[in-house]
Amino acid sequence: MAIKDKYCDQNRFRNVENLDSLFVTRTHKPRVIIGDAPDIRTCMRLYQDRIVHNWPSQWHSRYPDGYISFASGRKYDRKRLRINGQEAFIFPITEVTEIFWEKSSTKERIIAKLQAASDKDFRAIFDVFCERAGRQYKGWWSRDSAEQYLLSQLEAMGLQELRDWTALLECPAGSPSPESPSKAA
Image 1 (tube, rainbow, N blue to C red):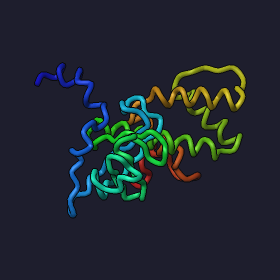
Image 2: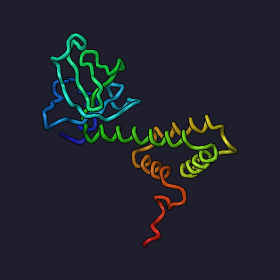
Image 3: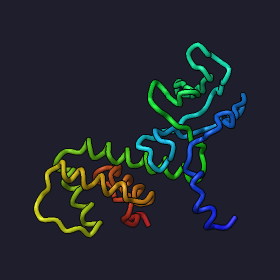
């Protein structure tokens, strides 16, 4: 298969259509990614879980086509495609889907740090972000508009940029930043 054919294959972003293909044994409990849309590129929420049981023939009074049980204790209704009443889609772990999951979890960590930041710390983060992006701003924006701007920029960032920002934000105060060369050399 040519590279162009692999690139144009939209099925690599799609959820598992055949739930019977999620093969589970006593020793093989596959990890999967669960999202809120049938295309992983459009998912707003993603999380990883492990399938414990895939039982299409169990508990038909509640689940007409059976259910899938996850290590987290959640149950996936195979007929309605729902977990706890919320629409959910299962994606296999592949190189492509894992990148989307990692981007999603990294953005969540950054957003958690931004939410927990005091106004002074948020201003400093915003200043560094604008400096790195080469963006000139005049005066201080309101926190709401600055948050909106930062969130829109997070969506446009690649995985490595998101990793760098996470490392920068999670760096303890007073310690050297991840970018600075080690002083122990």
